[in-house]
Length: 94
Image 1 (cartoon, rainbow, N blue to C red):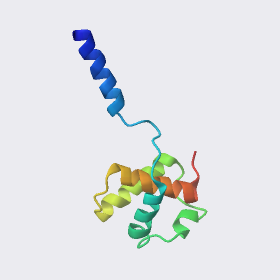
Image 2: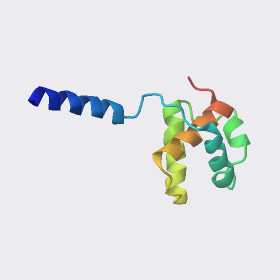
Image 3: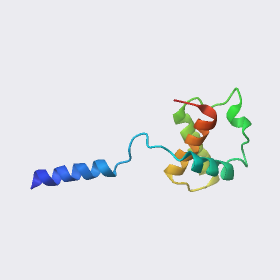
Image 4: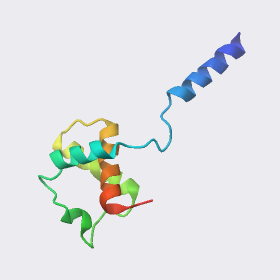
């Protein structure tokens, strides 16, 4: 009985955990970026030669900093979506 309970718990935990590399919704990220980010940033901030973001992790953290600064109260998935959109459109980090 104990073994069955442990096995069932492990299976449920594996199913409930988010899949690594789960695809973000780039279209949703674009909508959020257009609505919330363009007030401070135009496209040149993402394409300038001396941009400060140099990694995907750095991009993710910067999107989160902007979200917190603006008090947007996004879900983690929203931050992921915006970072994925920006990476897909401008940064192209692996």
